[in-house]
Image (cartoon, rainbow, N blue to C red; front, side, top):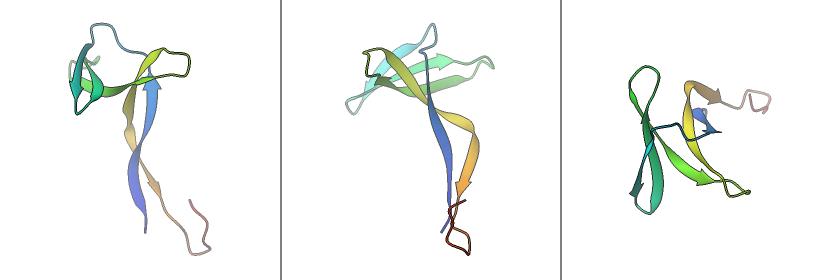
Length: 71
């Protein structure tokens, strides 16, 4: 069975971001270059700095072919 997903990556917290807390997790909200609202979970790095975890704009697919190799 295949799986469709978006990769996640960490980026610096944008200027003008507002912070909210939901279910014990901290989120940042900001407006992107296109003027649309964006949000991401705030995570703390090993060195103590905070970054935002966001989804990429592209979908990915992972599946196992007939030979049993994951593609």
